[in-house]
Image 1 (cartoon, rainbow, N blue to C red):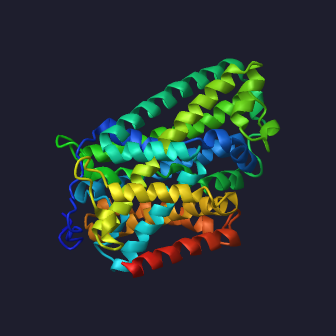
Image 2: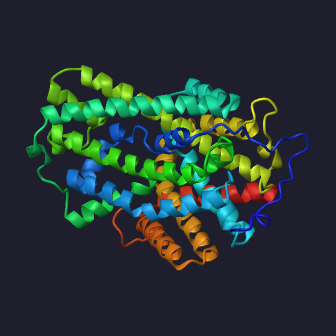
Image 3: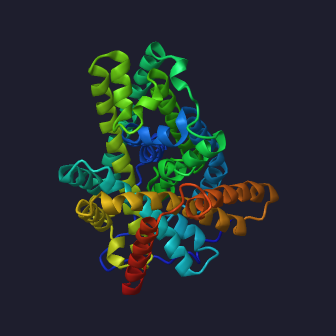
Amino acid sequence: MVQTEKLYRIVPHPGAMTTLARKLRLADYFALAFGTMVGAGWLVLMDDWLGRSGPLGAILGFALGGVLLLPVCYVYGQWVQRLPDAAGEAAYTAQVFPPMVSYFTGWMMLLAYFIVLPRLLLGIGLTVFLAVLNYRGIRWSASFQNWTTGLVLLLFVILLGISVARGTPANFHPAFRTTPFVSILLTLQIVPYFMTGFESVPKVAEEAHPGFRSTGFFRAILMAVLVGAGFYVLAVAAVAYVAPWQGLIGKRFATAIAFEQAMGAQWPVRLIVIMALFGLLQCFNGNFVASSRLLFAYGRRRTIDPRFGMVHDKFLTPSVAILWIAAGTLAGLLLGDALLVPVTEVGSMASALGWFAACLSFWMVEKRASMRIVTGLGMAVSLLLFLMKVLPAVPGHFSPAEWIAFGIWVGLGFVLRARS
C-alpha cells in the first residue's frame, strides 16, 4: 500500500475547512467522466475529422485510441483507490518525484481542463450559471451532469436510427483521405484532447458517498472511456453513412448539414443543435468541476496561494477555486481564437504528458510484475501520444504558435509557484 503521509500535511488557511461534501455515486462519476470527454466537437469539428482522415481513418483512429487508453485507465483506477486526492496526477507523482515535478504535472492537467471552457462558451450567462451551480454544492452539479448526459445519449440513439434508415455504404467511399497509416495517425494525434475526461474521476474522489466502494472508481473510468470512444466512432460512422463525406469538408457544422441533406428537412438539424447544446453543457460543467478541484488541491497543499484551498462553510465546496475558474473563463473570452486555437492543440499534449507521469509514478511504486507490465503499456501509450505532437518528423506536430502557447502556460505556472 502506498504510504500517503509523505504526500502532504494539510495545513489549512486560517478559518478554512478541508472536508468537501461526500455525495457522489457510480452514476455521478460516470456522467462526470463521460461528460467532460464528450462535448460538441462531433458537431463543430466533424469536417476536420473527415478531412484529415476520411471516415474509416477517423473511425479506426478513435477506436484504436480507446483501446490504447485501457492500460492508462487501469493505472488511474489503481491510483485513485490507494490515494483518493483531488490533486490527482500531482499527488501521484509527489510519491516519487521532487515537488517541482509534481507541481508542473498537475499544472499541465489543469491546462487540459481549463482550455475547454472558453472554447465552448456560449456567453457570460452560462459561465455565471455553472459557477453558481458548482458553488452551491457538488450534488447540484452532479444532478445537472446526470440529466444532460442522459439526454445526450438518448438523442444520439435517435440520430443513429436516422442514419441507418436513410444512409448508404456508398457514401463511405473513399474510406481514407490519404494512406491508411497516415489517416489513422492524424486522428490518433487528437485522441488525447477529445478523450481527456476519464481522469477527472480522481479529482472528485474525496467527494464519494460514504457507502461508495473504491472499486467503483475504476468501473466509472472504464465505462467512460469505452462509451466515449464508442460515441466518437459511431458519430463519424453515422455522418459518413448518411451523406457523401467529401462534400462535407470545409463546411462548419458538417454533422447537421449531412442529416439535413439526407432528410430534406430542418427538424433533424434542430435535434442535433439541442443535442450539441446539452453536450456542451455537460462538457463545460465537467471541466469546471475537474479544474476547480485541481486548483483547490493546489491551494490546500500550499503550492499556490493557500486561499485557493478554502472550503465553503455551508455548501462544502471549494468556493474560492470555483470563483477563480469562473473569472479565468470570463477572461478567456477576451483572448479570441488567435490564441485559443493553438492552446487547444497544446491540450492534447498536456493530457498525454499527465497520463505518462501518472503511469510512470505508479510503475515506480508498484512491485508486482503483472501490474508493472500493464503499467508499462500505459507508459508506452501515453508517451507515444505525447511524442506524436512534439516530434517534427510526425505529420501534424506542434507549430511555433503552439510552442508559444505552451511556453506562456509554463511561465504562468512559474509565477504562481514563486508567489506562493
